[in-house]
Amino acid sequence: MTKHAGKGHKYIFVVGGVMSGVGKGVATASIGTILSGRGLKVTALKIDPYINVDAGTMNPTEHGEVFVLDSGLETDQDMGNYERFLGRDLGPDNYMTTGSVYLSVIQKERNLEYKGKCVEVVPDIPLEVIRRIERAAEAAEADVTVIEIGGTVGEYQNILFLEAARMMKSKHPDDVAVVLVSYLPIPGSIGEMKTKPTQYAARTLNSAGVFADVIIARSEVRLDEKRKEKISIFCNIPKERVIAAPDVESIYDVPLNFEKDDLGATLCHVLRLPNGKQTDLHDWESFVRKTKNFKNEVKIGIVGKYFDTGDFVLSDAYISVIEAIKFSCYEVGVRPHIEWLSAKKYQEDPEAVAELSGFDGLLVPGGFGETGIEGKINAIHFARENKIPYFGLCYGMQLMTVEYARNVAGLKGAHTTEIDPKTKHPVIAILPEQIEKLAKKAYGGTMRLGAYPCELSDGTIAREAYGKAEISERHRHRYEVNPDHIKRLEDAGLIFSGRSPDGHLMEIAELPRLVHPFFLGTQFHPEFRARPLSPHPLFTEFIKAAAIRAKKG
Ligand code: GLN
Image 1: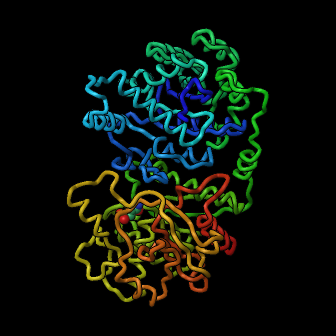
Image 2: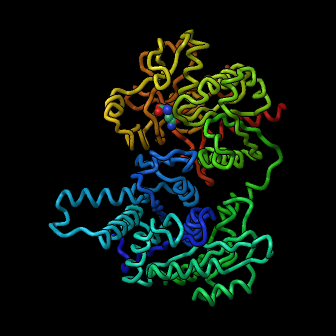
Image 3: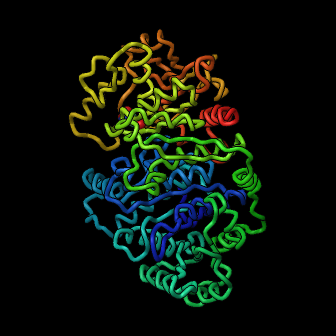
């Protein structure tokens, strides 16, 4: 059955006003958490206005992390927040860009699927958007589907998505709600919170034929009753539908904070959903309590490359890794202290790695290309020799294999062919099908992407951590451990504890506990599966080892 509005399925569009970067994604995710807490099945979608067909071709320093879904779709980092706040995997229809929508409309036109009709920007583009939203709702069997429209109202770029919202709402006014996430500045020279930009944002939205049902008022401090009244009068909504959203300590506080203004009950009222229930955020609350309550600290160093535009962007580029570390720290009961370490520094000055002994755990995350590569290998070498817990993710696992090959297995000059195609010992190499794709310059969406099964060997750290023999994890890479070198590496003591079911692809490499407290790398990206209420077992093992080192001082 399709999830058409008008058949009991409900849709909430979240749009931004005044300026970007005020937490529309977290607001969308939090609405999901709250409505799930009212016993509703919720899914969430992100619409990005870019022409890029997916987020896979965007530079993380500019756009933040590329978040990969089970399906292999490369998406915006907000999708990671949705999965973490909803505690649920999202499907391939839950993310779209302008480029992907146009691409499928044009493909359909080429296939004569419009049956000779003149295909037009309006209504055919919004109709395709609506089809995708309904497909996502159907696939998730959702009661409520929350859709974040990227950008800010008043831009040209997102107007066709607002038109899709308008079309859905004009047909089924009781099944579609619009939430405007706005910003109330407190200009330093005036020292008073101003509502006028929000009034303009609401009016701009109105000029697209869309009216806000709820306004989430982001601000440094909680907005007062007087300003709620003002927004209510000038933006045409009852006062109780203005929700205060002051800055909070952590994004995980946001759902609890929205509930102080009864956002859940308000949305149910707007959408004519049964309203008798209280929102039950019991599990979420106990997680949030854990984020504020710990005795000891662990110092984790992330050796990475995307530093160049400053810390702010850096944390965006690795957001899932950072959150995964935090969830496991909360689980273990230690305070996360994360520092960014520039791989370039350890490349230019190999002696500088000595400072790494001050860390309780080191992590090399995913990455591409040459920048800082020898620095990362130097850091891994130091972590192995000095028994500092080490966790390598994707590139971090490949480089750990290179380090082991060079310094333990006696394969001098070993490398990945990504960096040195002529290396004598290509311990990490490209798959034949990837060579063909690259020769055709087919870069977009062509890596080994998405969820693949993996089998774990008994008696290994990985097997113990997961507590089961078969797992599934998400991938995003072109290169693999070269099958020709496996025997040599194993003979030298490296254990491939996770493999693809056919045995050909090495998914996890580790050293036994007797040799090293934690030296493990994964070809996949476990960070995409870490959730607040279910931290990732490998991250938890890593943090446990780091906590032991921290205790020893
Ligand atoms: N550059 C490596 C590859 O393509 C690793 C990719 C990653 O870390 N995501 O295989």
